[in-house]
Length: 183
Image 1 (cartoon, helix red, strand yellow):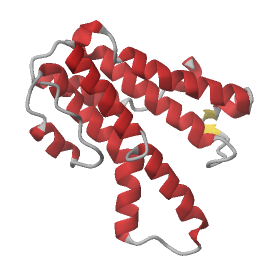
Image 2 (tube, rainbow, N blue to C red):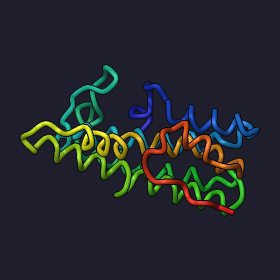
Image 3 (cartoon, rainbow, N blue to C red):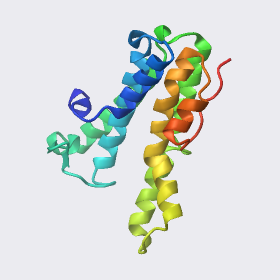
Image 4 (cartoon, one colour):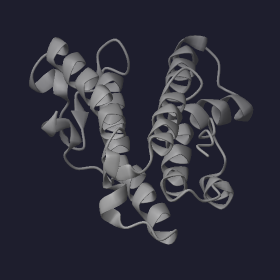
């Protein structure tokens, strides 16, 4: 798990922290949400690299998890990072139970069948389609595969602050499912 979270841009975590900071939330209060989105993103990369998906041997210039160890270890490390993400969103330091539930629900939606998983499924289907994707199809694929987690990350700081998510949603481009209201 540690191996999989090393390196990278940490863009999603940065967006959580900066969105929270802009709304007066101290970093210490938002750090669990930033760590959660990074754990979930790392899980998605581990699974994306597997032979049954993109079959990549390198990630960030290093052997992928399934190459360094084996496929079973990679699946389990990814599964553990996914569940860790939701555990981190249960941190009482993030705020009220309503805030934490809104974050859990939002991340579940952004990473699930209407978000990242949908985008990955569209990506796999596109590889076997035998024809180039249209701009509309590419946009839908990326809105799920990448955009839904970016939108969650951009809005999470506002959820933690109990503020209007509209400006941060607009900044994220509004892709993917919207975080639920918590108040």
